[in-house]
Image (cartoon, rainbow, N blue to C red; front, side, top):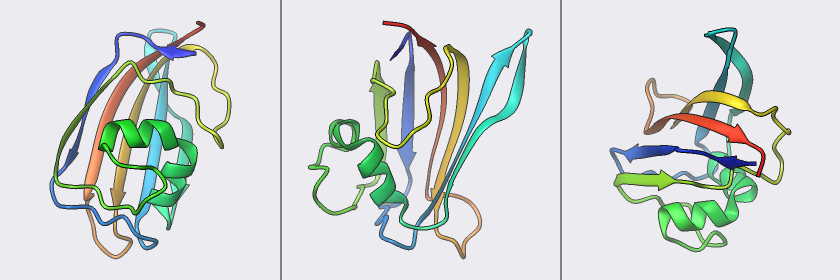
Amino acid sequence: MIYQNNFYSYNVPNPATNKARNKQRTVYDIWSNNEWKPNALVLNYPSKACSMMKLNRGEAFAKVFKQDASGGCLIPRGTYYVANQDPRMALFPKMPYGKYRCLFTNGLPWRKGCMACAYVEMDLIPK
């Protein structure tokens, strides 16, 4: 599987120290019958979000945030642009081919809102 024609930005408004206390929620919707079907896949990490992201996406994490995936979890403030990434993850369910949109939020459990968020639209196609 590969992403096709995907380009998205990832905005980190404040330095995200993503330690064990951070939470992450990722919601995937799928395009089917000319409409978005919400909540096709929901991933919740109530804590240790950065560790899970690095475990699942080690190589991609290192490319996007320009740091060694085996190091700490400090993501500097900024906007990160990503294009044509391989969507495979170590601990991720296999997904059927199709068009998806994804809302990714990351923050602290005791605060409303997100410290880092991303909105992604992608096509999963066979290689």
